[in-house]
Length: 108
Image (cartoon, rainbow, N blue to C red; front, side):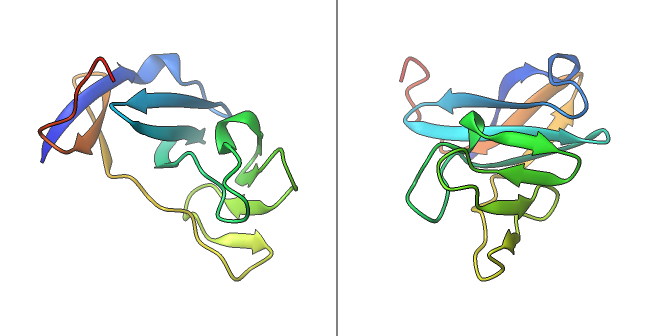
């Protein structure tokens, strides 16, 4: 595993979400009050892309069927029996980095 820079942290504003692709993996990044989190860009309900949804405060809402998640923990809030798949990130030297397999094809 290795850390891969995916975007400048300053480009993900507070209250914003964005989808990125790292190799074959789709990831949604969220910025809640300066706290950046990353999850697999896939709603556990019917696999809709969370990056096409909405971020309102701490609430991340899937665009397809309006399932809601706590954007800081990934825990389902409506319904409460689900959990987003977290992706390990860090911010270093102003870059958002994701912990990824070393064999990822960055052209992907």
